[in-house]
Image (cartoon, rainbow, N blue to C red; front, side, top):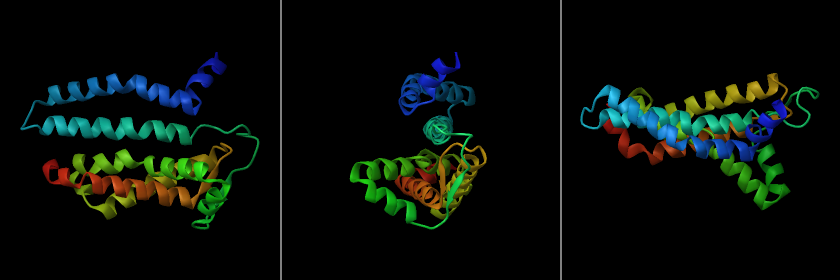
Length: 180
């Protein structure tokens, strides 16, 4: 039974499929939350969309990051603390792999960066979003190491994850003032 479950939800394709299947449920969650709160000039809808957006847009990426590699549990955790070292290694491996890796890391906390300043006015500055995303990313990298998932815990991942959240925050900036 576990093998069947893992083949669907323990792979990149499975996570993407689950994310697509869950979209109507996410839409329903936004509707239910907004209706329960009533509509105060659209604020209830905006807050519901931000809350669901943070979860729906972040959980699948974190799930993928925490998927174990083929040698999980049997190899010690690996750490890379030299900034840009892993990026250069990835770029040397080829443009397709580099693009996928870099864009993927930029997207991990992008939903958090986009929606958090809308939902939580106290976070409505780029430095605060960068700090939040970097903190979340450090937690994920530590989990990869501690759980021995056969992955490299890298400072470059933290930097790219935070940068993606910061860029997404800038993209949502026009809606921050409406969050209060």
